Length: 466
Ligand SMILES: [Zn+2]
Image (cartoon, rainbow, N blue to C red; front, side, top):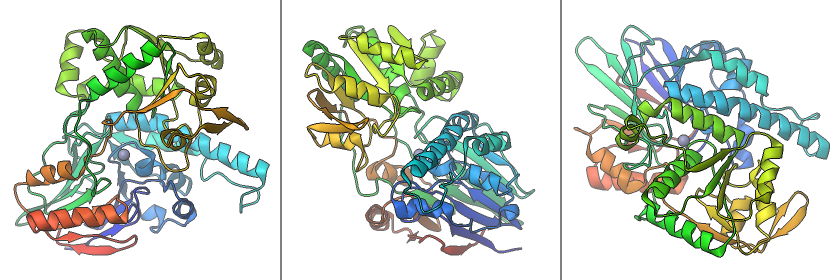
């Protein structure tokens, strides 16, 4: 039997660029095909030649639709990849929204770089454009959760629930051998046990090799009552008499927030408010969530069966055109404006912030991670003004941070998931974490379970008994 080899091509020492190559039974399979994001030295890697000849790749599995797991696909396609890209149906639907948008952003960035003349490439080229992204979509092959994909007669792969975002799955790949069966499990991004709308992560069994994410390998989420905190913040904001502005990630976060607002209105813990979902992308993602209620958690499905429209608050406004978006400026009180991007790096949220921040009666709710260098982070740190549209906008509105929306398990939740494994995997590889997070999680796993844990570097290969 041919040797099986696993090679870590990205997200080894960082949290972006997830790509793992599995060479087995004469096939080359890629698990995730992500874009490097964030730091410039990471982003530059997107321009490197792909480490495997594109025509040698037989198939690609996606664990979920986030760009750091899917965003390199258009580039591969442009370089000639024509093989299957397997993923769950909701992941395919979300990728149809996210990939073309990313292509469009790449084009905008290149255009901007040319205008300012700051690119090394002259003229600056987009990594890929919207058409490249659209060209990859026909390759997506949706697979139901739990159904087998057979990349070879002796390999069976399937997705199971992992929480995190709609459509996400951990991937089990089984090899049927003459005397036994072996299993590799790719966690993808591991979600949380009690998400607002998503099913909790399922329990894998009989795992021989585990490829495990470690984003929160050294951190714990604060335990608290999300609905209670959110209701208190909204009620206080309503009392001050202004409007509430929420920068939210268009996929996942915006829909969870709508779900919670609907719940709180129904329970009477907040008053009925005008809610504006002002992001074309969040509205597309909303349609995707509505199309896949069967893939949500029991509570959400129970409400669906009772005829509840999960994301429909009492007075929900889905604004489409720019003019409708601008018209929201006339609203002066008892309203929540949800818009993207989640860290206020671009998008319609900017015009809402520039309109609302100068007035003390308004409130900005920060419900997501705010990376360094973003306007969201500046607000979080209490900056007195924000740079927008070439001017300085004074921050007089109240800024509140709401914790508890994270889509990643913290290390106790990861450890609890591992405790449910019926036996020790032969070897665990930690990926998708900053160096300190991976080290910390490796320490926890060794100390608690005494399992064999490896922290691979980018480009490292390992031979597996598979
Ligand atoms: Zn993710």
